[in-house]
Image (cartoon, rainbow, N blue to C red; front, side):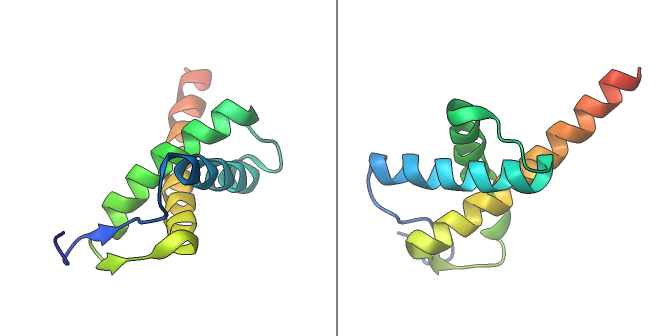
Length: 95
């Protein structure tokens, strides 16, 4: 492992599903104002958020962040993703 990269190390597949669900659920509540995207939608948002958050925060954080840190990183990435989707979606609806 390269010590200069952010390592999201919560564990196996089941833990990543839980991290994705928690991060996606929280991000959808924060960005959308209290309404989630459903179980699958929140999972996808959270897992994609983990990838985005890991990439963006990898420039600032080095090393492993553990389970709680992985949820925080995934949440931040999911919020970024939802803001991008929301801004693109609002442009299309006005065109």
